[in-house]
Length: 452
Ligand code: FES
Ligand code: FE
Image 1 (tube, rainbow, N blue to C red):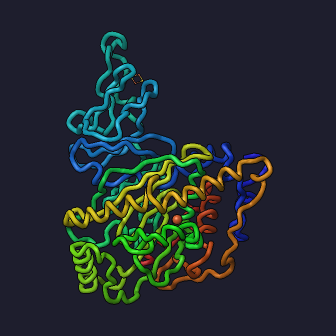
Image 2: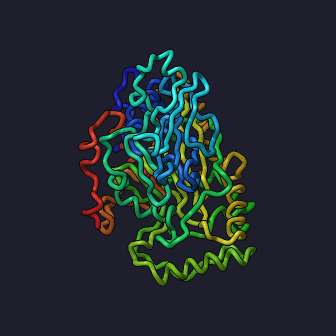
Image 3: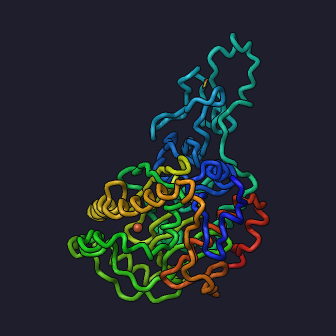
């Protein structure tokens, strides 16, 4: 890590973060070990593998992993690398397969509970009796599986670390806001699904720029001025998104997660029309709004616009809902994935309107996201030089103005325009990079039971 310690590179309380953590390859390799091998990572959505034996090839850090649903309906996540000589087993993006056969020497691995005791077990070895004289212990040479995997309201999360705390402890009360993205109808049957496949594209920037942006950088709205003028909102009107009342930059200082949103316990008020050009869509969202008014307790009255779960997953928590993940490729390149969530049982017109909006808004061809990508690539490129990487980025907006939110233990706010959330994100980054134990990492975190 060069001459500097982590604490010299990230002086979060002062609002100073070294540019080198966005461009240095040695620091990048440390991130893979200290963060991506330990933290809970988002790997996909259950609707990508609806049937037994469906698989979807995902990533955890720089590792390729297979996300699959076994015959028992359980979600499994395994390293997409043959145990023999490491060949990438599965080279399709998704499909349906119970047994994965390696193209190099033909070893095969299965998730079929009838054949194997654990998913990813080695079941077939060409020449096992002859070349190996029957002596190779197949039980020892299965695929590496993740230490823990969780299906939380359809979103699949995994960690390589057996000692990581339970996922719900890891996200703490950020759960309230994640729920607004994953389950906006609060458990009503039907659930959500990803529509239109997963958009994937590479961006020549450091991976941290994106989650930092999503954690509550309202200040950069000037970047999107042109889009606001032409108007690509959900209903085709002006602005990028629906009208939103004053939000706060809400963060979870001990956990490193954060968002732009409105606090719970507010009165939602009357439905604000935004789909004027699409009466059927308007009627659908109006009904959901009114149903929420009738049935939900105040605790679920949270609204989220954008948020980030540390380290590399972000989401839009209001209509339209999206999930994003930023995979590290190198210190100066990431692969960005976007998934678009709709209610599974929504009418086609609603799904169609959402799909069109996503295409206008997001992805490499989207009018808004391309603005952000330009900023992130420009900042990365301009920080690569021997001189520029020695400088610090400025995150000093709102230093010293954080306030606790008594209604939500573990939660704090700092107005609408602030860099508080970025500071808590990089503080968390430094804690992981310093190799703190899970006991230390979770020491100040509020447990769910205390928060109840
Ligand atoms: Fe897979 Fe040899 S690398 S069988
Ligand atoms: Fe933006």
